[in-house]
Image (cartoon, rainbow, N blue to C red; front, side):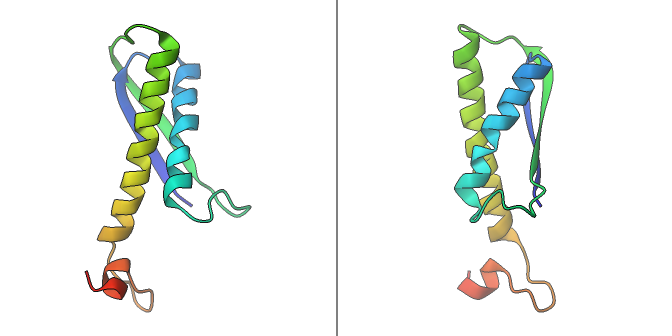
Length: 99
């Protein structure tokens, strides 16, 4: 199970925030194999502070924010794996790859 929060300063409706969260799920697919298995409880929440208006086309702005969110999710997951430490008999990436 992976729980993630994507935050933006954009002014978003509930439906727009949901669309960003849906797009951000692509970051899971980029970083986790296998992803979305029957036992997963992966979830992404989108938070918006509402301090910046979307500029230009709403669809283009949402696409840009969602694409960037997916990139950030993938990078955050990879960094989490890289930075993790071994725990008991479960060896971390760093310990198994001599980083």
